[in-house]
Image 1: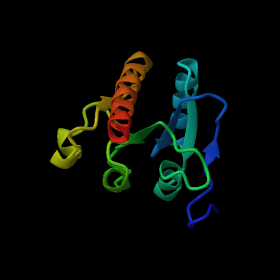
Image 2: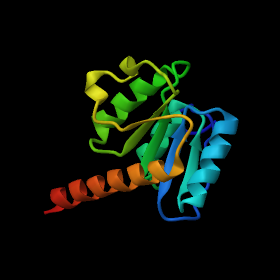
Image 3: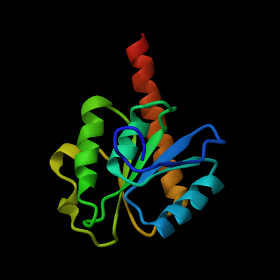
Length: 146
């Protein structure tokens, strides 16, 4: 168990930018990790929302650059996790993955600014979304510093 009661979190931190994966099954995590690595990203795998929050808030580790979250209806805690992250880390880059043909109401109005992708994952488009979100996050941080 990790501090705070969450499950252990697997980490691969050999590259500069990292993407935290949450809400995916083992085979999806592996596929996403491979795709992210092929596009120059590290992946961090969180097995539960507590482990994800520990990473996002940098509890004893460097926080990830982006959160990639599965909003499959089976993982109902996804929207709650997004609300918690947004409440304490405004502007933190989040990309939501929903199943192809998922009900568009899965994202309520409050989270409408979060880019959504439908499976199967197009890694070229995912890379573009990550880069766009990182650029916005860097501009926000730069604006706060001046």
